Image 1: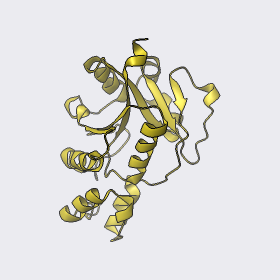
Image 2 (image 1 turned 90 degrees about the vertical axis):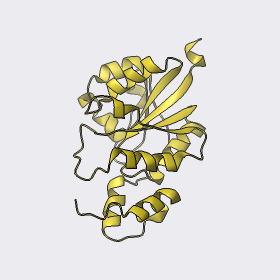
Image 3 (image 1 turned 60 degrees about the horizontal axis):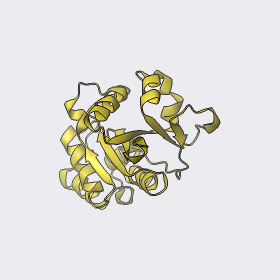
Image 4 (image 1 turned 180 degrees about the vertical axis):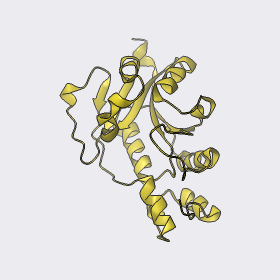
Length: 199
């Protein structure tokens, strides 16, 4: 019973380079329809599966996330991984979170594409054993919820196929993508002339 009273906290990890409407709409859905009390955008300084040539400074990306989420009471920007060893492995982040915030249950948010490769993550069995996993649909990655282990469930969120790579490439090409971004994030990118450089 005590576990049911804990704050259900979604962990949405990523480089958010930059954060865009796809991230925000999915997170909004999870809070309003997915049974999550709060959602933390966990800005990671280094993803083990990504190259870093086009990765903006950690604090600029964190600032954009903070700006995008500040007006919605269930969203929070987190720099928790900034203080952990690099590269940032999800299992270690979740274990540190559980130790630091015992009043919360943490729900890792992953796309169906990442779930398809979940067995390549560090200690996937430990993640599933000790934490909850929420899987949202991605085009081309069918899900079979009946095969999911305990603590893993699918959320039927709308498909929004926008990526940070698309945003960065469009900006470099001189495209106006203001409606793919939170207005204040778009303002920061324009004011600081971000993503204009060639990778």
